[in-house]
Amino acid sequence: TATPAAPPAARRPKSPGLSDTARRNLLIGTAAVLVGLAAWMLTRQRQQPSPSSPDSNYSPAPGSSNPSAIPKPVDQPPEKPKESPKDKPADPPKDKPKDAPKDKPTEKPTEKPTEKPADPPESVSGGLAALRLQFQRLWQEGPAAKLSTEADRLATPYKNALQKLDDDFIAKSDATSALAVRAERDRFEKQRRGLPSDALSKVEKLAALQKTLNAQLDKFSASLKPEADALREKYLLALTTLEDELKEADDPDAAKEAAAEFSKATATKDAASLFRSP
Image (cartoon, rainbow, N blue to C red; front, side, top):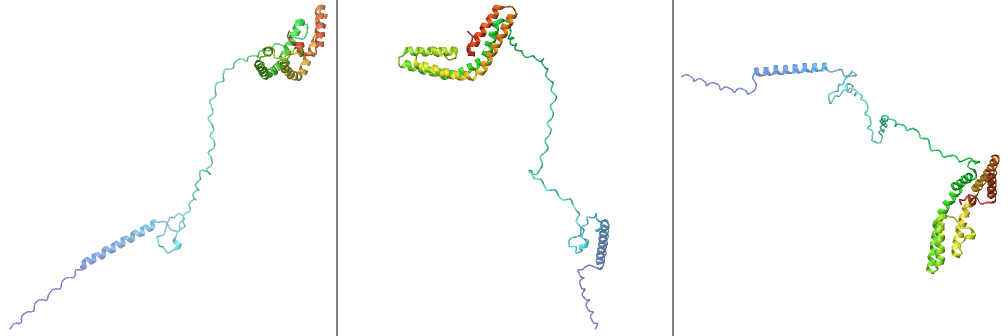
């Protein structure tokens, strides 16, 4: 009998790994990638500056262990400290814009001050009457004006004292004395000066007020005596000159009048009485 043929051997299943062809292609591709990467790295290294160059900004890769390959940092100018508002210098003052030159105002012609007419010469011009009027004016503008100012200052307290005295007499039903007080008040308003001793009131209290006023005015007049005496002496000298000129002008009557006025002025020691207007 024929021996039965053995059954065909069972085929081993193929390994799921890559085939030889695929493996070869993978190796070739990987080698090509490595070659390309090496060529790219070589090209990039050539383009970079040398680390030893002073102008190089090369910085080693992190983790480099070669200290000599670490380039020195590039020196940069230090930053200026910020100035605080207090330390900041003040801006220099700006020059103010100059104003445009203004047109000069038209100058008015200088007016000459009104000249005060000079005093008439102390001579025969106008005669004795003119000379006397001249010195009366000098008296009124000088010592008399100052005395009047002082009398004005004393007027208020004097009138107040008179009014109080008037009220006292009215309260006592003394009409006669009250009328005397009012008469003195009216007189002082017009003349503003004291009274001679022989003209004082017979009312005792009123006379006391009048004496007080006289004492105050006399005290002030005494301070004016040097000025008044100088004016009086000047008047006497002018009278002497006038008398001589009248004699030379062959006017004996006018010369006699000048001589009489000289005698009167010499006898009158009080300048106020001498130059007081009649």
